[in-house]
Length: 466
Image (cartoon, rainbow, N blue to C red; front, side, top):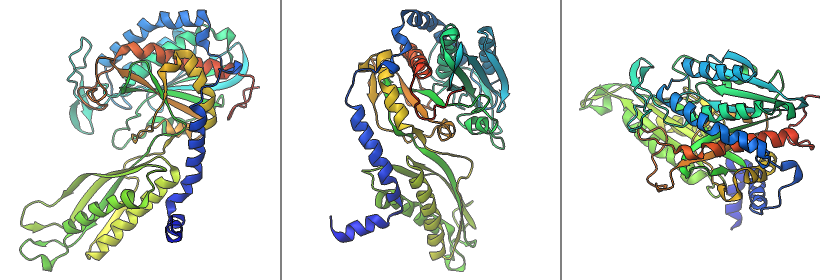
């Protein structure tokens, strides 16, 4: 590398993420070396009694999932689902709090003696998608979404997340006297975003105090992955899911007749140059060997007919990043590029970031991840636990993981007879999940919880409840 190239790289606003990236890469190298499972990491799955409880609850988990799938509810409207969850927790003798962040449910299970507090989270909301999958329990539900009547479907796996955590609650409640600490079960509404004009999701739950009373030490969660083979688990230290920031750019010019463009200021031409130039942020300003980012325009709206140059064009898009510093720098460059290009065309650009909502990146605590990988391998088998690249999708568990050490894993839901390329994607009418892997979700969440509670060492954030 020449001196000039090195100087240009050092001046880049994205270089601030390099050290953190290198730390994660070093940890990845360590995690590829499979060491014997330390005594403190021995999972609950080794206990035949616990494994028997897990196997006994598997059929219930599947039944709960099918029931929830057949009766999906949109964000902040999960009334039936939250009642199902609350009743189940109450039957287990778990302290129940309802109406948290609108329709959220929190269950608190106190163990037989004092110790750390572990938070387990599942999201409950469905999507405005009409189901096409032919199942005995397919959804035929319709509901109003932002003023429109839409089909409703669990097209992202939240039905399974809820059912799996209900199963984990039953397993752990059955061994409460053996648990040194507290488990906080969080069933969250509106992970996909609250309806227009409303607040919701993990951010609101955090504001309403879900991480306190008692104070949470660590948090675990999982997400179904339709591309990963059923029962397999994917993990990654550091950035697991990207930050997500919607943005709006309003390009304003001066309306005129299409035959006389020189009499006005054309916002359409300015908007076109803005769209093209925004792509250079990723292609020319980010070292993609170190981190990743995305800038996408998803909607362009402006004009009423062919021979009128309009006064305004609206651009709607999204910014995704795995590193908080990169997230901030990309947002600033979007503002700069839009404003300066608009000015060059004698137009103006108003930039709103975020426009409707913004999620931080979901960061897996590196130390907690390293500590839990052998626990997961012991619980479900080392052949089923894989280090995988991050995803550029957003996930609002990030609001929890930025306050306490967290670990977010992916649980496979692809049938072995379906190729990864042919597996239906999330958020689509054909989304399908193989239920055979659900039991490994129960095993993983149970094992991580029990291992952390029983550990004699003080891991990241572990100050206990003494």
